[in-house]
Image (cartoon, rainbow, N blue to C red):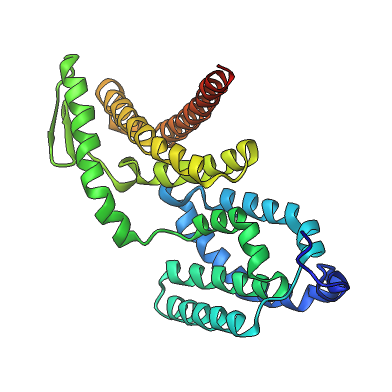
Length: 290
């Protein structure tokens, strides 16, 4: 169904000659925020997936440009200005008080307002997935992350130490502090599973969208399976770090092997998500064939 009136493509097209002032204005707003993200959040384990989300999200929107140009119908100006003002308040507040989450949310909101002005809310809803996916680039507040990861840190610490103790490794635990031989390890937020959960959810949603379409029901179902996979992967990660510390010393365990273990297990967890998706679809295909 054509959502645009005749001639709307010419008036509201996506040609650079017509859109460059908006693109330039958005770049002036977004580039300083991207620089701050690259210097802060993206350099840490819990935010390392951010550049991937932005790059792939921009690619998804780029693929939609022909359809957006063909069906574009400008949104109501009052809605555009409402989103713009609210987003501007978030941006200014976040920038003034060094609250990167609000600053990034403000940039994201301004982008939505510009898109509403260009193509309208109906078309934005029709292409909801890329917009929702890009929201994962907004960093989770550190205070909220600490509150959420507290019980996860306790759980993964207990699971890792109890498992290794059963195999004769001299390991003990007090809260989130692990004692192995003469060494003492602290389970940080990055090892609790929260960073893996957010990153895995984002990448898994992208995979589902590209392979299975934008079914929100199936996306929600697979996301529920991502959470235990991420937690189990981080339990294994902590066990590996404990064993590295026990056999090779703290210096080896905290070297590049610490980061490498996280990347390998994240990749393994992602492969498990893909394999689980394939298995589910094979089972559903056989069930429907009966």
